[in-house]
Length: 447
Image 1 (cartoon, rainbow, N blue to C red):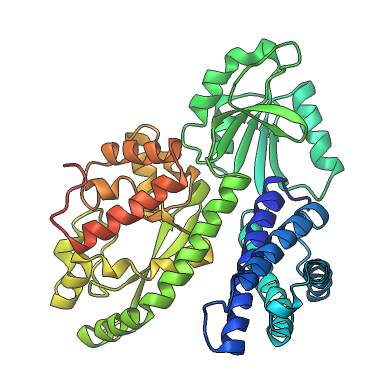
Image 2: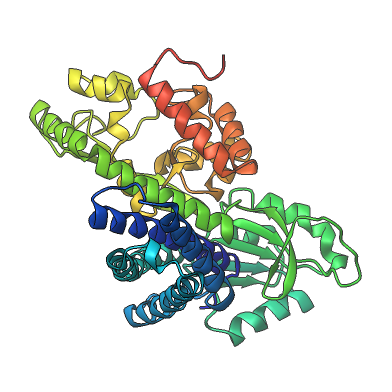
């Protein structure tokens, strides 16, 4: 599958920065093993380490740019070996022509050359595999439907049929526009719906959008734009055609990679740090009441698809034997340990496993139970639009006090604000507000 350009560019830059860090690290590590001190005996060492880093960065940018997709061991070893040999040979020439050999230790130079080569190879293999894993999680084939006929729809169909390696999988093509048929398309589990209408049928668009009201898919409009001049419109190119984004996730291409990198890295780090606490909580849950440690509950996430969300069990196993009931969860908790866990949101910690699996995000709208989606989507305007992004452990609504038994209409407005205004800075802000709110319950972000 052909990858989009933002990923190689961003990932290549990310890896080169790590490579530069390795050169500095191994240079001063070699100084420590040579002289048993981290401080340089003279500034010549600092100059050569900095010079090597700059040379390496220049060579890798101009010669080996965009090769981070080559994650096989042989290709990584070959690429890094060529880079480091060129870089170190350049440094050796500088030492020779500046007659600086008497100012530096040959033992240090050898240690630095070997350790940098080994560490660069190891780090590049590991980082390359992690980046590929994160990126490929966002490159699963997207299930799409096409609504409409004419030249635009036919061109999309031809492109889909002629290339089996593209990232789209056509589920249904609805050529005849009828409200009932469109509603059935909206009930399908889809990633995107492409509305492909000639200009003379554009007046059908409001009715189509109304029939797709309950769909959680990204909806794109592909009108015949060849005779029009568009300036600064929100559009994307798909299969060589210009499409207007009507309902679209903020995560695609580079932003999707950044979001996945954020989730994967933070969730892995957090799970490692909290593993002792999770073990103690698991033992406490097991000893405090009979039943399983984890409570698995079906929730609805990205594009309206269900997944099993994990929690530490805080209620008796037969609490919902008569069926699911929305709200009032605190009244179902009886054990002091369970009340303490819920007050500090510790029962939510296993959801970092969901994040690591790719079912959830650390920041995003809270997922609702499948049993209540049918009711809420009819009662609350734009309710299904929250599923344009992955569900989150915490979110913009939650840090503003909208959690548990609170106004769903207001909560949706906060969720939609997050989707429309997403940035990495906003995610970090929400995470910090969540930590502060947990450690200091009296803290009010609305104040």
